[in-house]
Length: 138
Length: 148
Image: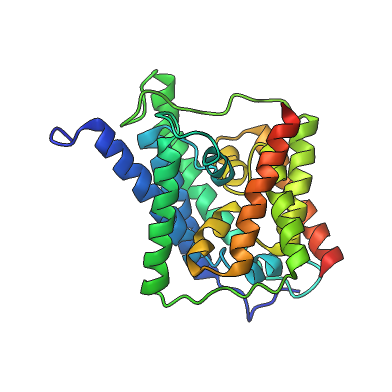
């Protein structure tokens, strides 16, 4: 059953377009893939001329986030997960994206957008896994 | 472009892309774990919003890729402000890809958070989000150590 009370098609399409545009810009101008897990992983390497851009991208995300929060009066999202769930899920997301070479942005947008079979398979796999894990843990 | 050195232009665009990406995640409500869970909850009251987020992001990116980037690569041209396109070269559908995707999906379903929204949500300075972020880094570190 579709939950029409929660369905927000316009903001979803607008926000999604902005995400797609940001990814396009980063590849067209800078030659880089906006895979957020990969970019985050770079923060644990020693800064050098080949990964400075990762720091700048994350700084841009944080500044954009602050601007968005103040412009749209966003409040802290409700995190209803227990502490144990947060710890386990955080470890799984970190290790899983490292082992599987990508997350929602890298595989789901940039990979599928380049018609990479690897990314299409990965995206279907993490979507199905997410549906199953939510079903079991909710 | 003539008065702005290429490296300055490079970092300005990287910064701008990051900001735009973050605002896109907020506008689309991907930063709300409850929204993500509502999308993954296909057996309950299903909220299809995130399918539209992915659809819109993919449409803009894949059309732009086909029209603007693919021809540049075919003509051996570099990106506008960089020396080359850094594209993934791996093609294999192998065990790490599948195992990693299952682990990531499982964590995503438990907490409703993936890496992008986690970073965007850091600005709220919420303890659970900060701990999730630290655990995510730790998970990456552990996976990397096991790999080598």
